[in-house]
Length: 183
Figure 1: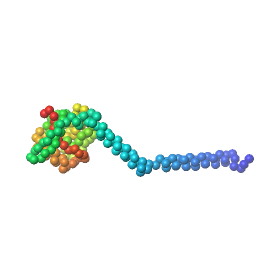
Figure 2: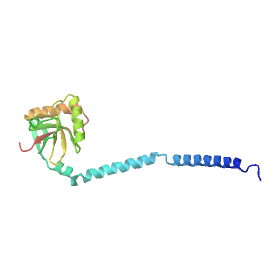
Figure 3: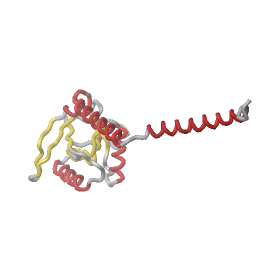
Figure 4: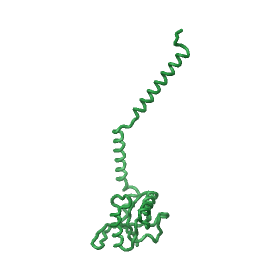
């Protein structure tokens, strides 16, 4: 019988198993470490998916909502602006009442999700636009109205002020004037 048999041999084997386990776990963790090329591929896939979703938008109800408006030019004191004409209604709990919605509406945001529209409306409110509210199309598609006017000259003035003030982040084609259809 060897002097290294029995309990001593078991302890040595246990230490070897622990060391091998630690080495294997370390190797597995090191091999899972993300690389810059993995980040780049993931980013490129996300961009491609977003672009694909944008091109597929025309086949959705949101694409239909975007197509269901008419465009016209509005000329006020030599200033020409594009106006979208669309059927909209005040969104319940969107910060406004039916009497708030006038003919010309300066739009600061357009969204598919009501929560996002309400969130922007709150930011506008806090930035000094207390008359802001949310309107929706029949699909629904949500627009955040910074101000609403019956006078086209006042609407163009409010549009220009919103363009220069930029109280919230807005991407083209925002801001714009939305004319309530049927009125």
